Amino acid sequence: MVESVSNPNMHYGNVDVGVIIPPDKLPHKVIYSSKEGQRIYNDMQRDLYENSKKAQPPKRKFPLVLKILGGIIAFCAGIIFLGKKFNIGIFKKKAPLNNTN
Image (cartoon, rainbow, N blue to C red):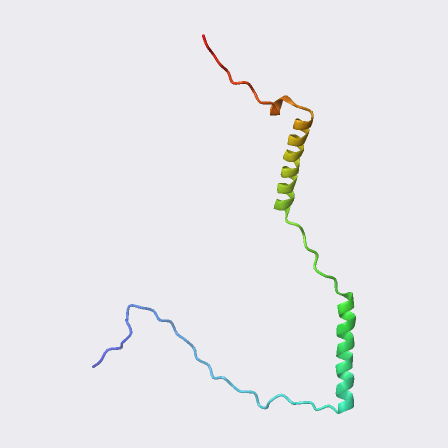
């Protein structure tokens, strides 16, 4: 007798297979007259136009990291500018120390 190809130590699980039932009939198509079709189309276009006038563009926020970085750069540039303008001691060149004992 030929044994099963599957491994008896493995659990493959039970798969329930159902039957797909097709619908009884296809969806019913509606045919409009030329005038009624044009009226429905114009109503849709008017709704789209009115809603597009009310639409607001999305608000974009400037990234917080760039705001902080710009603030730090502006602060450092201000300190350097004021230090050179008022000749503050931080920016003066210091004389080298010559210890000759």
